[in-house]
Image: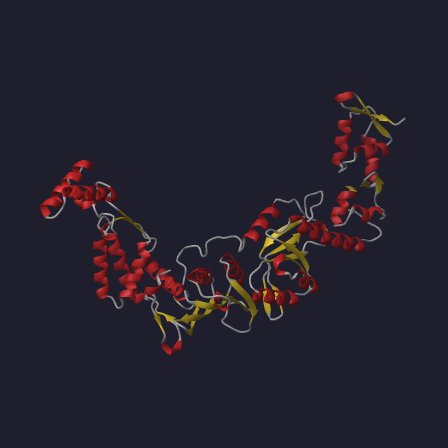
Length: 522
C-alpha cells in the first residue's frame, strides 16, 4: 500500500478511478530501481537528490514517489559513525558547557576535549554528532523483490489498495467466493452474501457485500487498510469484479475494478494467515480437536441459502463414526456419511447485526443448525423458535454443551438406522462380532439383538457361519495350546475365543502363568 498523499485518481464524470501505470512507465520504473541500486553505500540525502531529479523529468512526481516508497521497503539504511551519535552529542555538549563556546575556536576546543575523552579525532567526532539523522544515514543494502515489470504491477495493486482506504462498502464477485469469504472473516470485516443474476463470465452468482463501520460508528483508517488487504485476495482470483463506495471528503463516489484492470498480485501470498475471525472460534476449534468424537470439525463449509441471500456458517460437524475395521460407518453402508450439523458462533456486535443474523436463521431450511449464542444477547429463545438448537455461552463455548447436542443427533441417527433394518441380517463376513456389525450399520448393539441371522450361528457375541464351525472342529484338538487355538480362530476373524471353544465342546485348562491347554469339557 501507498500513503494517502501518493494517491493518484481521476474524478471525471463523478467517478473515482485510480491512475494506473502502464507499459509507457516501465522505463521510469527501471530508472527508479537503478537509482536505488546505484546509491548503495551513499547517504540518503544523495539518494533523495537523485530521485528529485527523476521527479522533475517525470509526467507526475507522485509516480516517482510511489515507486520509491515501495522500493524503500526493500532498502536497509544504517548509521555509520566512529562513535555512537547520541554519546558523541552528550560528550560534546558537556565539553562546550565547560569551555564556554562563543567563537569557532571555542567550538574546536570543545570538540577536541570531547574527542579526547572518547578516543577519536575531533573531525571524526564532528561527523558523528548527527550521523543518525535520516538524511545522513547510509543505504547499506538494497535487494528488490521486483524487476521493472513487477514493480509496475506492485504499484498498480498498491494504488488500488490506497484508493480503498476511504471505502465504506465493497461489493465483490469472484470465481472463488469461498476464498473471498475466508479472507473477509480473517480480516474481521462485516459482510453478507447475496445471490444475483447475470454478470461477467467466470464469476460466481454470489455477491459478497462487505461493509465498513460508518453505518454503525465512524470510518477508521484501520478498517480502510483491511479493505485494502482484502483486494489482494480478490485480485488473486481468475475472474472478479469489485465496486466500492468511496467517501471522498464527504462525497460518495463509485470505484469500479475488475480482472480487466492492471491489478494483480506479483508473486506473493494474499492475506496474512489468520485462521479464525474471533478468539472464541479459535479457542473452540482447538479444544474440540482434542476430543475423540465421531464428528469431524470443518471450517467454513459450503454456503447456505437464506432466501435471496447466502450465509456461510463458522463450522460444520461431519458425522464419521468408525467401525471395528477402521472405515467409517457411512463407507461401510451405515448411510450417514453425508450427515452434517452446521455450527454458528454468534457473538455480540450491534442490534442491527443481531437482527440481520436472526433474519438469516429464520430463512435457513432443511439443515441441522446449532447456534452458540452469547448470553448477553438474550436471543436464545428466538433462535429456538426458528427451529435451531441454541447453546448459550459466556466467554467460551462449553464443549460439554456441544457434545451433548451432537449426541442427541447420534441417537436420532441410530434410531433412524434401526428403523430401516430388515428383520433378517446377512453379514458378508464369515465371522463378525455383534458390536462390529452394529457399527457397520450405524446402530446400537441393542438394535440388532432381536434380529435373525439365517446364514450364521450366534456364538456368544459373535456370528459365525456353520461351515466355519465345522472346519474348526477338525482343526481344534484336545491338548492343543490355547495360544495356538486362539491364533486359528483369529485367522477366521473370531475374537471371542472362549465362547467358540465352548461351542466346539472345549474348555481351557490354565497352568498358572505358563499358558493354557485346550481340554474337552467335562
